[in-house]
Every structure is written in C-alpha cells, then in structure tokens.
Length: 168
Image 1: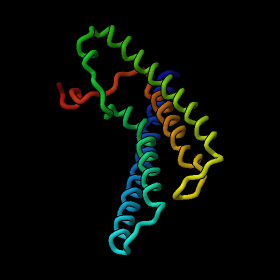
Image 2: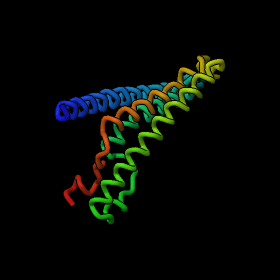
Image 3: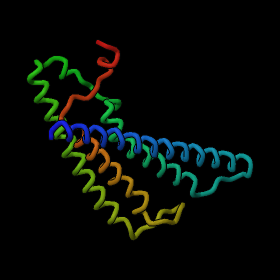
Image 4: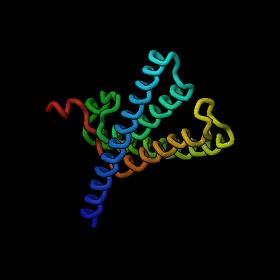
C-alpha cells in the first residue's frame, strides 16, 4: 500500500511539474510577444496600446506563480542550506520535516488569503484591459494552490542542493 502510494505521489508530482512548467513557459513566450508588439508599435506606429504594459505585467506574475511549486520541488529556488550541512543527520531530518511543514502551512495560508483578496477585488476593473481585477488576481491563489499541492506530494524529504548535483 505504501509503495503504491509513493509511486502515485511521484507520478502526480512529475506530471504536475511538467504541466505547470509547460504553461509557465507558454506564458513567458506570450509575455515576450506582447512586449515585442508594444516595442514595435511604439517605434513604428508612434505609440503603444495602453493595455500592453498591464497585460505584460499580469502575464509575468502568472508565469512566476505557476512555476513556483515546480521550482521549489526541484530545489532550484534561492536557498541557503548552511544549517543542514552543519547539523548531525538526525537533526537534519527534524529540520527538513519542520521546513516542509512550515512551507506547507504558509503555502496553504497564502492560497486562502490570496483567494479572499482576489474575490474581494471582483467589483473593480483594470485600467488598461478593462476586465475585472479578480481575473488576473486569481493567478495568486492558483499559483499558491499548486505550490501547496506540489509541497504535499513532495513530502518531508530533503530538497536537492547544488552541491549534491555536482557530486560534493
């Protein structure tokens, strides 16, 4: 039972990482295209559309938030693992569990709070695009929910470090 659950958990984690990174990459490409369109229209036609900056900003925020969980799972985020190297192995396991539990709690809390914030902003519209502010703000709870899911699937295991990757 445990082995089957571990396999399901790893497959779920791998699939969610691939999907979120693919979507985040697509959003980054869309951001680049929007910015290039804005630059082209500014210098060729003499003025960029008013919505261009706002859309590029929303796409960038969505890109970062969607990639957040996958980057955390891969250990590719900015992190200092000095304490783990100095502690004895038993204390490292306790520290890793504490870090995992804290990350899970904070990501879950951020999901809930950002959802409340996004829903409270639904009566307002954005200046450039003229859409409800809740639409771009929903990337916050979606991104944090994906982080929560991926942290939960990863479980209380140590994250990879750069030193492990080079074999030190």
